[in-house]
Amino acid sequence: MKSTLSLTLVLVCMPLAFAAPIGAYQQGTVVRMHMGDCQLMHRGFMNQFGPPQAGVEDGCPEYTLLTDRVVFVIVGRSSNQLVPLAEVIDFRFQNKELAIRVDDARKESKFVIKEMSLRSQWELLQKHIEYELTDPPHQPVDTSLALRNRQ
Image (cartoon, rainbow, N blue to C red; front, side, top):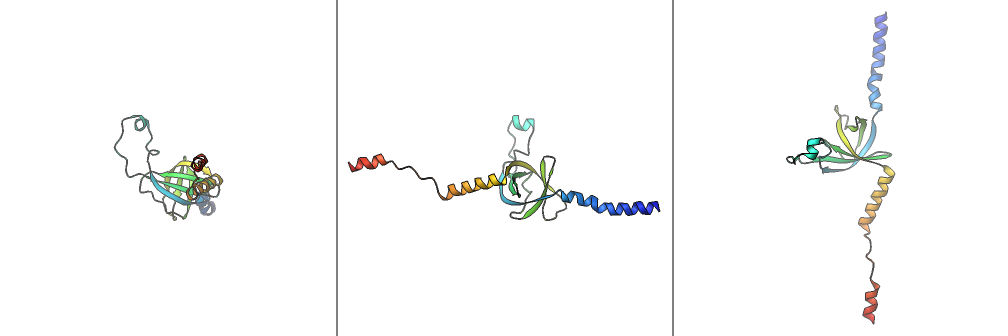
């Protein structure tokens, strides 16, 4: 009787144990990607202060991950860590990194957090950049030259 009760208890609690980590995931959308320097990934005294090393691979992918309140700039460990753009992905914090799960993959990919900012500040910065690109600042006109030509 006790063994049946304990087996039932284990079977009832097992789905709860597996469901707990899923609740820790947050969702965000990748809005930008470019290949950047892998300098964040190769830390260490010798790498920083030693002689220059041979060229690092092609570069590491750098993504801008947009959530409801925070914008993250994250860097992958190698050039083969690719995340699809404009898709909602699940992520969670793990040991000062972001663990990302794409399309219900069995394995998470780890990314280093390069920058974090509030979404409201990021949107203001994006609007400012867009304004500067579409309406460049006008050069002040030197009226003294025009007045001299008339005289």
